[in-house]
Figure 1 (spheres, rainbow, N blue to C red):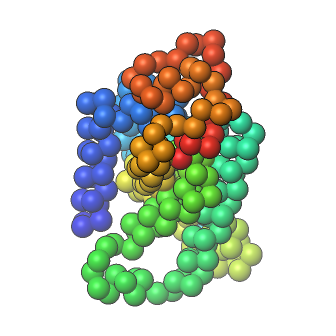
Figure 2 (cartoon, one colour; figure 1 turned 45 degrees about the vertical axis):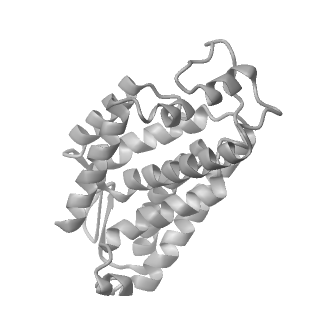
Length: 244
Protein backbone atom coordinates (compact mmCIF):
# COMPACT_ATOMS: atom_id res chain seq x y z
CA UNK A 1 0.00 0.00 0.00
CA UNK A 2 2.89 2.34 0.79
CA UNK A 3 4.44 1.73 -2.62
CA UNK A 4 1.09 2.23 -4.33
CA UNK A 5 0.69 5.59 -2.57
CA UNK A 6 4.10 6.77 -3.77
CA UNK A 7 3.25 5.69 -7.31
CA UNK A 8 0.00 7.65 -7.27
CA UNK A 9 1.79 10.69 -5.85
CA UNK A 10 4.36 10.52 -8.65
CA UNK A 11 1.57 10.32 -11.20
CA UNK A 12 -0.15 13.37 -9.69
CA UNK A 13 3.12 15.34 -9.74
CA UNK A 14 3.78 14.49 -13.39
CA UNK A 15 0.21 15.35 -14.34
CA UNK A 16 0.44 18.68 -12.49
CA UNK A 17 3.77 19.64 -14.08
CA UNK A 18 2.36 19.02 -17.54
CA UNK A 19 -0.99 20.67 -16.86
CA UNK A 20 0.57 23.88 -15.56
CA UNK A 21 3.15 24.00 -18.36
CA UNK A 22 6.13 23.41 -16.08
CA UNK A 23 7.32 20.38 -18.04
CA UNK A 24 7.35 22.12 -21.43
CA UNK A 25 11.15 22.07 -21.70
CA UNK A 26 11.25 18.29 -21.29
CA UNK A 27 8.26 17.73 -23.57
CA UNK A 28 9.97 19.79 -26.29
CA UNK A 29 12.89 17.35 -26.20
CA UNK A 30 10.49 14.41 -26.54
CA UNK A 31 8.58 16.10 -29.38
CA UNK A 32 5.36 16.20 -27.36
CA UNK A 33 2.90 19.00 -26.71
CA UNK A 34 1.10 19.50 -23.40
CA UNK A 35 -2.17 18.23 -24.86
CA UNK A 36 -0.59 15.13 -26.35
CA UNK A 37 1.28 14.36 -23.10
CA UNK A 38 -1.89 14.72 -21.02
CA UNK A 39 -3.79 12.58 -23.50
CA UNK A 40 -1.12 9.89 -23.24
CA UNK A 41 -1.31 9.96 -19.43
CA UNK A 42 -5.07 9.53 -19.54
CA UNK A 43 -4.69 6.73 -22.08
CA UNK A 44 -2.17 5.00 -19.82
CA UNK A 45 -4.49 5.31 -16.84
CA UNK A 46 -7.38 3.80 -18.80
CA UNK A 47 -5.08 1.18 -20.33
CA UNK A 48 -3.91 0.18 -16.86
CA UNK A 49 -7.14 -1.79 -16.53
CA UNK A 50 -6.50 -3.76 -19.72
CA UNK A 51 -4.23 -6.82 -19.58
CA UNK A 52 -3.64 -8.88 -22.71
CA UNK A 53 -2.72 -12.55 -22.01
CA UNK A 54 0.34 -13.78 -23.88
CA UNK A 55 1.06 -17.28 -22.57
CA UNK A 56 -0.55 -19.67 -20.13
CA UNK A 57 0.24 -22.94 -18.38
CA UNK A 58 3.62 -23.31 -16.67
CA UNK A 59 4.59 -19.72 -17.45
CA UNK A 60 1.83 -17.14 -17.31
CA UNK A 61 2.63 -13.90 -19.09
CA UNK A 62 0.61 -10.84 -20.02
CA UNK A 63 1.12 -7.31 -21.23
CA UNK A 64 -0.65 -4.28 -19.79
CA UNK A 65 -1.80 -1.66 -22.28
CA UNK A 66 -1.22 1.36 -20.03
CA UNK A 67 1.88 0.09 -18.29
CA UNK A 68 3.77 -1.36 -21.24
CA UNK A 69 2.21 -1.01 -24.69
CA UNK A 70 1.67 2.77 -24.62
CA UNK A 71 5.09 3.53 -23.02
CA UNK A 72 6.68 1.20 -25.61
CA UNK A 73 4.95 3.04 -28.43
CA UNK A 74 6.05 6.37 -27.00
CA UNK A 75 9.65 5.17 -26.67
CA UNK A 76 9.65 3.99 -30.29
CA UNK A 77 8.25 7.35 -31.41
CA UNK A 78 10.92 9.30 -29.52
CA UNK A 79 13.61 6.96 -30.83
CA UNK A 80 12.36 7.50 -34.39
CA UNK A 81 12.51 11.27 -33.93
CA UNK A 82 15.97 11.18 -32.33
CA UNK A 83 18.33 13.77 -33.74
CA UNK A 84 21.23 11.59 -34.90
CA UNK A 85 22.24 7.96 -35.39
CA UNK A 86 24.68 8.43 -32.51
CA UNK A 87 21.84 9.33 -30.17
CA UNK A 88 19.85 6.31 -31.40
CA UNK A 89 22.87 4.12 -30.71
CA UNK A 90 23.24 5.50 -27.19
CA UNK A 91 19.55 4.93 -26.50
CA UNK A 92 19.69 1.31 -27.69
CA UNK A 93 22.95 0.65 -25.84
CA UNK A 94 21.43 2.19 -22.73
CA UNK A 95 18.41 -0.09 -22.96
CA UNK A 96 20.60 -3.21 -23.23
CA UNK A 97 22.87 -2.20 -20.34
CA UNK A 98 19.88 -1.18 -18.21
CA UNK A 99 18.23 -4.54 -18.81
CA UNK A 100 21.51 -6.31 -18.00
CA UNK A 101 21.96 -4.49 -14.70
CA UNK A 102 18.36 -5.14 -13.64
CA UNK A 103 18.55 -8.80 -14.68
CA UNK A 104 21.73 -9.24 -12.63
CA UNK A 105 19.88 -7.77 -9.64
CA UNK A 106 17.04 -10.22 -10.25
CA UNK A 107 19.44 -13.16 -10.28
CA UNK A 108 21.12 -12.05 -7.05
CA UNK A 109 17.87 -11.36 -5.20
CA UNK A 110 15.77 -14.18 -6.70
CA UNK A 111 14.04 -16.19 -3.99
CA UNK A 112 14.59 -13.57 -1.32
CA UNK A 113 11.63 -11.82 0.29
CA UNK A 114 13.08 -8.33 -0.06
CA UNK A 115 16.33 -6.52 -0.53
CA UNK A 116 18.47 -6.10 2.55
CA UNK A 117 18.01 -2.35 2.37
CA UNK A 118 14.24 -2.84 2.64
CA UNK A 119 14.85 -4.34 6.06
CA UNK A 120 15.72 -0.78 7.04
CA UNK A 121 12.30 0.27 5.70
CA UNK A 122 13.85 2.91 3.48
CA UNK A 123 11.74 2.19 0.42
CA UNK A 124 9.59 -0.52 -1.13
CA UNK A 125 11.83 -2.77 -3.29
CA UNK A 126 9.76 -2.08 -6.41
CA UNK A 127 10.98 1.53 -6.41
CA UNK A 128 14.65 0.59 -6.49
CA UNK A 129 14.17 -0.76 -10.00
CA UNK A 130 13.03 2.50 -11.62
CA UNK A 131 15.66 4.44 -9.68
CA UNK A 132 18.43 2.14 -10.88
CA UNK A 133 16.99 1.85 -14.40
CA UNK A 134 16.65 5.61 -14.71
CA UNK A 135 20.18 6.24 -13.44
CA UNK A 136 21.82 3.63 -15.69
CA UNK A 137 19.84 4.76 -18.75
CA UNK A 138 20.88 8.37 -18.15
CA UNK A 139 24.56 7.57 -17.59
CA UNK A 140 24.69 5.67 -20.87
CA UNK A 141 22.24 7.73 -22.93
CA UNK A 142 23.18 11.18 -21.57
CA UNK A 143 20.55 13.08 -23.53
CA UNK A 144 16.95 13.40 -22.36
CA UNK A 145 15.62 11.41 -25.29
CA UNK A 146 18.21 8.63 -25.11
CA UNK A 147 17.77 8.31 -21.34
CA UNK A 148 13.98 8.16 -21.64
CA UNK A 149 14.06 5.54 -24.38
CA UNK A 150 16.81 3.51 -22.73
CA UNK A 151 14.95 3.30 -19.42
CA UNK A 152 11.64 2.19 -20.91
CA UNK A 153 13.10 -0.29 -23.39
CA UNK A 154 15.50 -1.55 -20.73
CA UNK A 155 12.67 -2.54 -18.38
CA UNK A 156 10.75 -4.21 -21.21
CA UNK A 157 13.89 -6.10 -22.22
CA UNK A 158 14.22 -7.19 -18.60
CA UNK A 159 10.75 -8.76 -18.71
CA UNK A 160 11.66 -10.52 -21.95
CA UNK A 161 14.88 -11.80 -20.35
CA UNK A 162 12.90 -13.06 -17.35
CA UNK A 163 10.50 -14.88 -19.66
CA UNK A 164 13.39 -16.53 -21.52
CA UNK A 165 15.01 -17.44 -18.19
CA UNK A 166 11.87 -19.23 -16.98
CA UNK A 167 11.57 -21.12 -20.27
CA UNK A 168 15.22 -22.24 -20.34
CA UNK A 169 15.24 -23.26 -16.67
CA UNK A 170 11.93 -25.09 -16.90
CA UNK A 171 10.53 -23.05 -14.02
CA UNK A 172 7.03 -21.96 -13.22
CA UNK A 173 6.52 -18.24 -13.05
CA UNK A 174 4.59 -15.14 -13.97
CA UNK A 175 5.83 -12.34 -16.17
CA UNK A 176 3.64 -9.25 -16.39
CA UNK A 177 4.83 -6.60 -18.82
CA UNK A 178 3.76 -3.35 -17.18
CA UNK A 179 1.63 -5.37 -14.78
CA UNK A 180 1.08 -2.53 -12.33
CA UNK A 181 -0.21 -0.22 -15.04
CA UNK A 182 1.00 3.36 -15.11
CA UNK A 183 2.49 2.90 -11.62
CA UNK A 184 4.68 0.11 -12.98
CA UNK A 185 8.49 0.16 -13.17
CA UNK A 186 8.35 0.86 -16.92
CA UNK A 187 6.70 4.27 -16.70
CA UNK A 188 8.50 5.33 -13.53
CA UNK A 189 11.90 4.42 -15.00
CA UNK A 190 11.28 6.75 -17.92
CA UNK A 191 10.27 9.55 -15.56
CA UNK A 192 13.37 9.08 -13.41
CA UNK A 193 15.70 8.96 -16.43
CA UNK A 194 14.37 12.09 -18.12
CA UNK A 195 14.22 13.93 -14.78
CA UNK A 196 17.90 13.20 -14.14
CA UNK A 197 18.80 14.27 -17.67
CA UNK A 198 16.82 17.50 -17.30
CA UNK A 199 18.22 18.39 -13.87
CA UNK A 200 21.85 17.66 -14.75
CA UNK A 201 21.54 19.11 -18.25
CA UNK A 202 20.02 22.33 -16.91
CA UNK A 203 22.79 22.64 -14.33
CA UNK A 204 25.50 22.15 -16.94
CA UNK A 205 23.93 24.67 -19.30
CA UNK A 206 23.83 27.28 -16.54
CA UNK A 207 27.44 26.63 -15.59
CA UNK A 208 28.67 27.05 -19.17
CA UNK A 209 26.37 29.95 -19.99
CA UNK A 210 23.99 28.15 -22.35
CA UNK A 211 23.82 25.15 -24.68
CA UNK A 212 26.70 24.22 -26.94
CA UNK A 213 26.17 25.91 -30.32
CA UNK A 214 28.52 23.85 -32.46
CA UNK A 215 26.73 21.32 -34.66
CA UNK A 216 23.22 22.44 -33.65
CA UNK A 217 20.59 24.04 -35.88
CA UNK A 218 19.61 27.67 -35.24
CA UNK A 219 16.00 26.68 -34.56
CA UNK A 220 17.09 24.14 -31.96
CA UNK A 221 19.34 26.62 -30.18
CA UNK A 222 16.52 29.16 -30.07
CA UNK A 223 14.27 26.51 -28.58
CA UNK A 224 16.85 25.50 -25.98
CA UNK A 225 17.26 29.08 -24.85
CA UNK A 226 13.50 29.82 -24.96
CA UNK A 227 11.72 26.46 -24.53
CA UNK A 228 8.24 27.88 -25.00
CA UNK A 229 9.13 29.20 -28.46
CA UNK A 230 8.38 26.49 -31.04
CA UNK A 231 10.86 25.92 -33.90
CA UNK A 232 9.76 26.28 -37.49
CA UNK A 233 8.18 23.04 -38.79
CA UNK A 234 10.51 22.75 -41.78
CA UNK A 235 13.71 23.04 -39.77
CA UNK A 236 15.39 19.91 -38.54
CA UNK A 237 16.47 19.35 -34.98
CA UNK A 238 19.77 17.50 -34.69
CA UNK A 239 20.19 17.62 -30.94
CA UNK A 240 23.07 16.04 -29.12
CA UNK A 241 25.90 16.84 -26.76
CA UNK A 242 24.35 19.41 -24.44
CA UNK A 243 20.88 17.93 -24.37
CA UNK A 244 22.04 16.14 -21.28
